[in-house]
Amino acid sequence: MEWIADPTAAGGWIRDRLDADWSMHHFVPHGFPAYARIFHPTEVRSLPDRPVPTTNEWSRMPDAEQQRLMELLVATPASWADAAAAFGTTMHAFAQWQRLVRTSSDGDWHPSIAPDGREFSSPNMGSISPELLAAIAGRLIEHTTTPDAGFVAVWEGWGGLVGAYGSTGRGFIEFTDETPKPMRWRSLRESFEMPFRQAKWQPGILSDDISKGPRFELPDRDHVLFSAAPAVFADPEWILDAPWRDREAEGHGFSPSAQHPSILWPADRAWVMASEIDFDSTIVAGSEELIRAICVDPAIEALPVPEGASLHWDADEINL
Image (cartoon, rainbow, N blue to C red; front, top):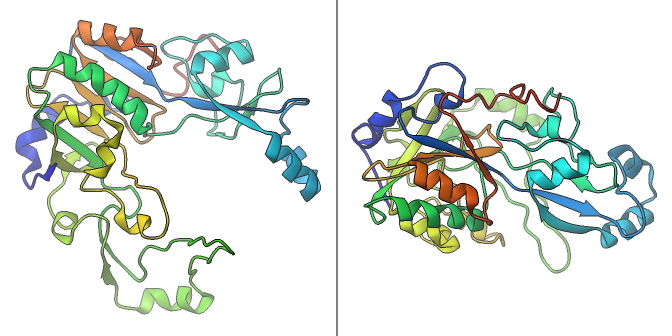
């Protein structure tokens, strides 16, 4: 994977197929035969002999009781269809999570307790696991003539990805066998004096040349663009070779990690995969055969959506 200093030449065609309004095509290009919506997985937690406590119930419990229940909690992966079955709602292509789990539509993304006492967490926004990406990429590379050549865009706004001018750099909580070492927080004096100090360049995960270089500019979102073989992402270990791998965090005891690609496409432009940071689902645009293969794969929860579909929070007109 290599940084592309001239992103317009490689990705300008995508920008030309986007809409200015806030719709699916604000992020996903028009002009493909078919589209699939891939639902980001959730997690369900349960207790053997009682419903999972609500947030208010947890807050009223003695510490010892909280600890006892936490040790009994069992967490397992779950699908949107699992959540719909638990809450008595309907899973469909335009389902919206908050309506599926019968919560408010005002941005409340707290875990939801189903009638059977199980707790469903909200799906991740803007990212999926390396394992799910590998399953998707396995289908994608079957439907391109250039599985070994393509492009990947990473949203520049992920914390610490690019360098910036500021007064302090990134901080980490370091854990030892004995006790955690706290992150360094700004004092009140520092916070007061900060606006009067000369801002200094703080390095990011990516090099200074990349941080200060041109961006792949799309409506409301700027990305750092890299060349990348789509076939690489069919292996969950792709994070080990990603230029945006967070090696500094690993030095503080964290497992190897790299942000999920925001946009991925092959050199022959046969398809595009887009994970908008504010979406709880990933969209793939491509051939009808590709979309069919994705939607029938048991490792992927996906449904076809038409071109021009709305994924806004109120687009779910079934689970009102």
